[in-house]
Amino acid sequence: DQQVKQNSPSLSVQEGRISILNCDYTNSMFDYFLWYKKYPAEGPTFLISISSIKDKNEDGRFTVFLNKSAKHLSLHIVPSQPGDSAVYFCAARGNAGNMLTFGGGTRLMVKP
Amino acid sequence: GAVVSQHPSWVICKSGTSVKIECRSLDFQATTMFWYRQFPKQSLMLMATSNEGSKATYEQGVEKDKFLINHASLTLSTLTVTSAHPEDSSFYICAQGGLSYNEQFFGPGTRLTVL
Image: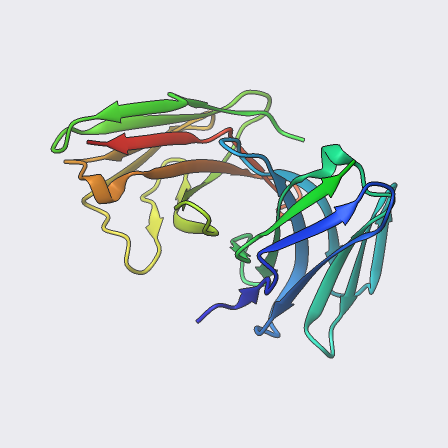
């Protein structure tokens, strides 16, 4: 049973446009959500996070939105750059510890 | 964020051998380390959580006798894949629990290929 799902395995966007990556979860006990970026053969790097008490967090070109009632979060990247091309994982943390549950990932391709 | 290193970055071994993967925290002490496995085009799957000085906690379905985890010091955790078989071929990544316990900082990963 996948508690965190990223239904789009891939996304292609033109440089300069907005990239929107989506993530859905089922466990209402999750209280903290994170986005990680991963290049091939490398470990994931932390990108941005949001607490369940907020509905938006912004950091430069990256904004994460959280809709608790819909159990949905999204990552917006604007403007998208070719260097953003990578696999993006959303992750959720339960309030019982700092264990993370990851989604399946979405491969973003930003075309020049 | 924290700096985490892994060694080796890539290992190829024959079936039946044991492989040790080291995960080091380079800039601060890590009381908790997480070990993940990622198969091609799949998500990161948590294998186990190790705490310094105590036994690791394994996720359901992960054989503790096959994947030995040692976290003997605050800067080093090791994962040993014992009697490796081709189906153990995967990308193994460790992560250090952040001070805030919100983020995890990942190592660069180790690609294991078992022939």
